[in-house]
Amino acid sequence: MMPRILNGLTITNCQKVPKREFFYWLTIIFNRVDYERIQSVGPDRACAEWLMKNGASVKWKGSSEHLKDYNKLQSEGNQCYIQAIDATDSGITHVGFPYLVGCRYINEIKLIRCRYLYNTALPLLSAVKDTLTILEINDCKSITDPGVHSLKNLKNLKTLKIASIPYLEDKASLRRELKEALPNCTIELE
Image (cartoon, rainbow, N blue to C red):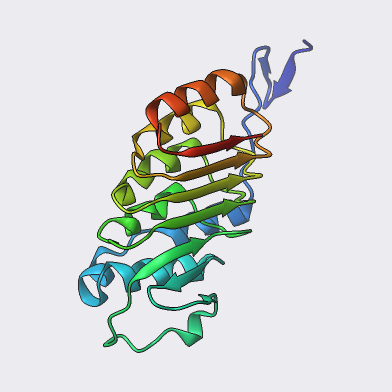
């Protein structure tokens, strides 16, 4: 390695710091939890606002369609409960996952091509472990074995689909461990 000269000082051992995109930092801001908002409008409404602000959609309990347009949210006085989340191509991060706390009817979550989703988000799904029955994680490039290991506590899962996760090291072992921890779950691990 060739030494570098910086302001007259010779630097021989310097690691390159990974760059964070501007949008990554902006995404972190959009994912911050507003606990006052949760108190004011309730967990489901606040969670829906967070999800939609970041490009995800929600399906309300009793509805057949997903709502993605933030401007079409019902008035704050109407009590609605989230039943399903589709976070395809959204900007959600682990920072916002505490919004799931208090949402008592979420039974399906799709995390597809979530660019800013890291292992630290998956253990936070335990906030909905009593109701979550369907989970799909697909093409989330920053998820690795430790993140998938943390799904073992989602004991009510009936369907778990994990696909196109390029940095999983030992899929056979993961599949075996998940099947042992979740015996009533159909597991697809591609």
